[in-house]
Each structure stands twice: as structure tokens, then as C-alpha cells.
Length: 161
Image (cartoon, rainbow, N blue to C red; front, side):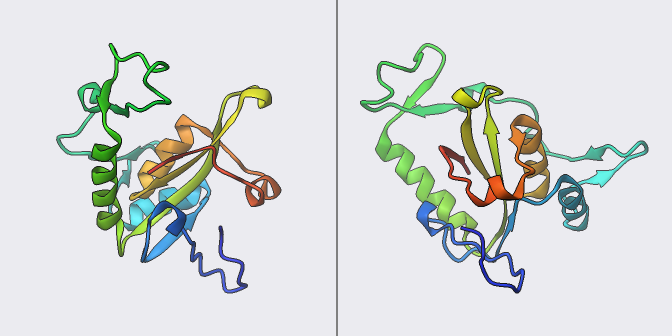
């Protein structure tokens, strides 16, 4: 949950995800603040016309061969396995543990969003990224929540780290 103190310290408790000892969590920053952070952190730069440019190095575009879905009792008969590669719950746990260790001591950007235009079918999605530009990207992929009252009551149905 967001910090409830009046100091605006932005300290967040993400231990429920196993994310411990984060140096800072930037909670639902507006796009302009994310642009500023991306530039300050040397993650990106602005070009003529105002576009934000990010050099992702050799990892550009989609990587469909690197997409895995946990195959368990819930997904075994609901996922198209001809288009998705299965991974065991144990394999996922090992990867997730490495990610938790990797993020220790780092700043992260957290964005609460939703998918689905019809409120009857919307899912709340929490996105946690290492870089500000990734949070901008996530905000373009999903629907940003601007209403502070809605954000205060936000409960994630799905989390992407």
C-alpha cells in the first residue's frame, strides 16, 4: 500500500510480492514525471518534436520464443500450448527468486492500470518496472487510472513485474 505518512517519502511495502529492501518505489507517477525521471536517469533523451528515445541495445522488438506460461492445473486446459511454451511452477519460482534478488536495493516504478473498456470485464493490472521509460510504455499498453479516489482503493487482479 502507498505510504500513509505526510512526508511524501514514497516508501511502499511490496513485500507481499517478495520485493524487499527496495531503495524507492515511484508510485503512479504522471507521464510528465516519468519523462523527467527517464531523462534524469539517462535512460532516454528527447528529440526534436518531443519524442522520447530509448536505446534498448540488442534487445529490440518482441521475443516470442522467450514467452513462457506456467503449466499447472489451472492453465493445463485453458492455454493454447501450440502458441505458448510451458514452464513448471518450480521453474517459475526459481526465476522469480532471481528477479527478487536482482531488484533488492533498486528503485522501481509502480503503475496501477486496468485492461478492458467494459467495466464488467475489466481487470486491474499492477505493473512494476525497473526503468521510468518502461512505466511509460506500460501506461501506453494499459489504461492509466487518473482518479485519486480510484487509485486509493485499487486492488490488483494481475501483477506484472
